[in-house]
Image 1: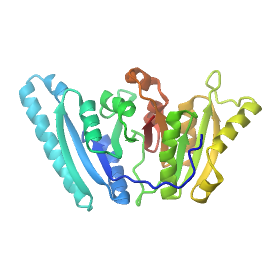
Image 2: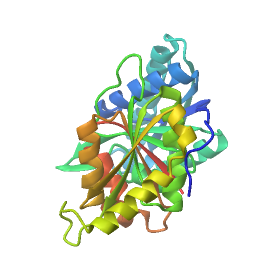
Image 3: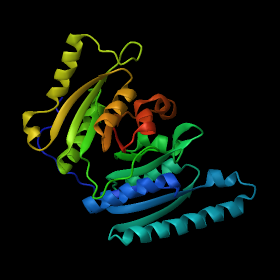
Length: 294
């Protein structure tokens, strides 16, 4: 399974930024601006008025109107802010009892190349800023999702992904994500770290058998044909222990600007996401995480 080969061009013509205008979405906005400037993207700003939350208020009718006015005014301010940087901006104000479905439909109808969301810490646990809505998006959106977690640093100016960690378990989902990782690496001339975490029986980071280690290293190296070394700097890394811990430790060690992982579509998205590698990585990563659904 080769993921690298002929150089590929990054194309992000349209970005959908789903926001609730919280403080945690502010960092995500900075990445939206930086990516749009770099790739000359059209940005669609989207806010969903959550009618389910509004109906819970003591005076639902007044609450819904307040929510609508807040969304309209906040979208207008954000549109003006981004447009002042010569970014093409459109706004989408939607409402419904299922925000995730509203966002998914907007992404599908608008031929979106990248969906951007922010995250925040909630009640001691890392929870996505749109709650279960964003958790659902990670596993159901067809387009790649660029998630800015609660620990993520703001982008440098000018933005460039200089060190990218691509985590693979050699699955088809991981292979699809690898194409995006290498696209960004080529575009930025980044140092690309291809990482596989070998699970230890008790989750510890102890080395496994030498023969097994060597077989995994060969598998990683086979993902990178020699031609790819002309346009990026790939390096294969083998870690041991829990997958999320290994990915996070490597990203911290190399000061990664971006982590790329593949995710699976599942009908039981909520329970699986809670215990999945993507959720754990997004929760603690110091940089954005790009998830690509297989």
